[in-house]
Structures are given as structure tokens and as C-alpha cells.
Length: 571
Image: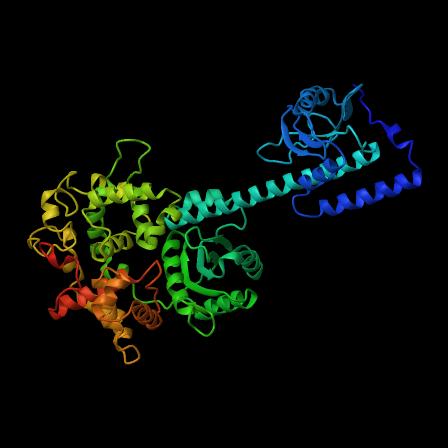
């Protein structure tokens, strides 16, 4: 076996002719190197002048084989592959095998032949050196210089492919890491989110505005870069793991006393829509990191208005929050309702615990069937968790009424809920006591959703939902929620929303109840979104707040409740 390229093959040709052929071949291979899939393309060109061309790994594995213009016994390449580990171990960059009536096989390393060649090109396989080029040349000999030129081009293309593959993996890892930080912030786990974000840029600020940017899904990567540049690299820009057309940006907000400056939000929306044409932007109020989920919900509501607005951007118009109106009594009621989950300990370590179940509940209420993409779990896993939540809370999470009760409890308790907040550690009641969320008596009273039958002498922390909502401040809040629907501009808005809520937010059932088409219902709800400044048709939806508002007004006027809890005992 010879260990150098056979230069005598070119002696029978005129030098000028050989140089011309070599130059044309190099130009042709260079063009192939600039095209798509350059490695297979160059191998195929070499195979056209030989019996076969192949790439062989340093462990003797045949990676790629391109058959040539004449038949070839596969054992020829198999024999050549067996000697590659020995050549690589000796550091021999080239060799010629065969002759004396057997096909000649040229072997050329695409690197320098050393064992460490190519290290660091691939984060997963960083110690793998460059493969070897094998050309079987029985009839029309390939000149040695041309083979060396091809090996150099192939080595370069191989390194570029590996580098591009590594770049894509690093970019995907960066996106997944940012998604993980965003997910932690959405469930209120600020400390671990900061620890992960410390390895990335930029640092997480204490106060942020959440922006949701809507664009064409095929342009989301381009739009992410443009949004990052438009905001001067100060924002966390993360592709939404649930909505393929959404980008989520966490933009630092100035920390100063007083109400938020609306001009800042408007300027932010104009900046993004001006730099990224064809986008729609919803901007939240300044929120602390632990309330990122609330900021995201605000931005979604603002985006619903921006879709049909003339400017393409909208800021969230703050309304009085239920959390402030209900105060400590509301938080105690929420702990009562969610106590079976707050104190839940799974039988197996691999099963989700209480906080993870509540995070699943929040994702389900926000994204419905798309929650599995947000949580990065299988659909069947999501269904199993919802079954556990249904059994623990005694709520039918397919109904808008029970969804609204669960939403209110999560909203009141906030992202800081931990098992320590549950009855096992903070409540004088022992586990299994009748707190309205577990036990037979609790189920008979509607799982804490409507406990008007609580005796006056009982602890006021365990009052039911209707008593909790039966205050003048809540009635005023409810009127403010539905007032835009009762205006002259949207005369059928309130009736449509009522019918939609009674139909469990299903468009076909709503259309049948109103005697109109599904498209007409969708248009009416779209006009209601503009009047309310809230999202209805896409999650996170304001249907839970509207259900509560309509129920408060119905209870105050003595009318029939909007549905759901009307049939529960104690309602």
C-alpha cells in the first residue's frame, strides 16, 4: 500500500492541457461548494470520473457512497474502510490501496489526519475528526492534484456543515433556555428564572412591560431579530411556544412612583410596528417579574384591540382588579378552594405535585387545548393532570362556569402560592376538614363555589363565592365590565356575550341559540372585543371575568344566573 498520491498519472498529458482541465474542474467544484448540499454534490462529480466516491469515518464506517459510471464490488470499499482507522492512528493523511489487477482506491483525509482534527466543531461530537475521502479509480484515472483539490474543498464544506449544524443547535438551545425562563416567570418562580437568565443576555429587570408581537409565522425568526435591534438589545424576546405567530418581549420599564405613563407604552408600540412592518403589538402595564403572567394577559387583551386598530398597536387600559377589591377575604376563599391541590403530595415522585398541578390549571385556563405546547408535555399527560385536578377540586374544567371559579381562585392567590400556604401549615383545620373543596360536605355545597348556606357564626374566611361577590364595590366593577357592551355602538353585544357564555363559549351552539350563522357570531364577538378592549376568541380570554360580572349583576337584579352554578346546591 502506497502512502502518497501517484503524480505519474499526469505525465502522459501536456502540461497546458492538464492545467486547463484542473482549472475547469476546480471551478466546477467551487460552484458546487457554494450551492445546496455541497458534500454530496462534489462526491457525485468525483464519482462521474471513477467507479465510486465515498466518505469513510475514522472508525471505518462508510458514511456516504456515490456510485460511479461502472459497476463496483462493495467489498472494495469495505476493504478500504478497514484500513482507515490504522491510517488515522498513524497520522497518515493520504494513501493509495490496490493495484496489480485490483481496483485502485485513493484515500485522502479531509483534515490533516491527526486524531484531534475537527475537535470543537460540534458540541455533541466535538472529538470526532474529519472523515476520509475514498475514490475508486479503475478506468479513467483522477489526477492526484485534482484529487487533493477536491479533498480540500470537501474538508472545507464538511467543516461548514458541521459549524452550521452546531450554530443551529446553539440557537435552538438559546431559544429553549429563554422559553424555560419565560415559563418560570409565568408561574411566579423568579429566583430560578434569574439564575438561568444570568448565563444569558440581557439581565432580567425588576419591572417589565410585556409586549406580544403578532406577525406571519414564517417571518417570526426575522421579526425576532428586528424587534431585538429595535429595542436596542434591552428586551428579552422569546418566540411564543403556544402561538406560532406570536413573539413575547419583556421590555425594561422605569421604576418610578405614580401611575404608569401611557406615552411610554404608545412609543414602544410605535417603535416596534415602525421597525417591523406588518406586525401588531399589544403592550401591558409595567409589572414586577413575579406578575409576568398578568402582564402577558394584559398584552393579549391589548393585542385583540390592535388587530383592528388603525395604528397596529395598543396598550392595556387598566381597569380595577378583582384582587384589590376582594382583598384578604378573597385570598382566604381562594386558599379554601385550592386547598386540595396546595396540600397535595403525589404517591410517586415522578407525578406532578400541588404547585405543578396549579401551573397546569393556569396554562389550561389561558391556552385551552394548546396548553400541552406551553407546558412541553404530551396531550395524554395534560388530560391525566386535568383529571387529577377535576377529582381534587371537584370542578368540571370543560365548563365556563367552573373555569371562571378556578381562574378567580388562581388570580386571587397569585403566583406566590406554595404548599406552605395550604391548610396543612397555615390553617387550624386538619386535612380533610370541610373547607368547601374536599370531603362529602364540601361537594354537597358545590366545592366552595357558592356557599350561601354557611351559618353566620362560621369563620368568615370560608364564605362562599356569591357572598364574597355580593358587595357594592363588586356590583360597580361588574357594571363597568359590561358597560361597553350595552352602549349604542354595540346594541347586540351583551346579548351575544350572554348567549356565548351560556353555550360554554362554543360558537356553533351560540349561533344556534341566536338563530344566526357562526360567522355572524364571530363578527359580533370581534366587535365586542373592540368595545371591551379585551380578547374573547383567543386565549388568554376575558370570558372568565365576563362570566363573573354577569353573574354578579344577575344576582343583584334577581335574574337567572348566566349558567353553570345555577343548578348547584347552595347557589
